[in-house]
Image (cartoon, rainbow, N blue to C red; front, side, top):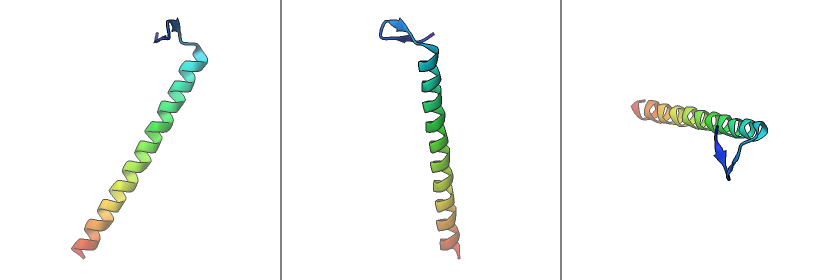
Length: 48
């Protein structure tokens, strides 16, 4: 259980935090894929 401002976090609050975390993880994965694609594209362009 998280302690949040001296009281227990409600189930809705916890669910909202999990959704925010999932969104952040999704954005990070997309950013990593885009960065990897750019790096691969640049290296392929340089090698060619």
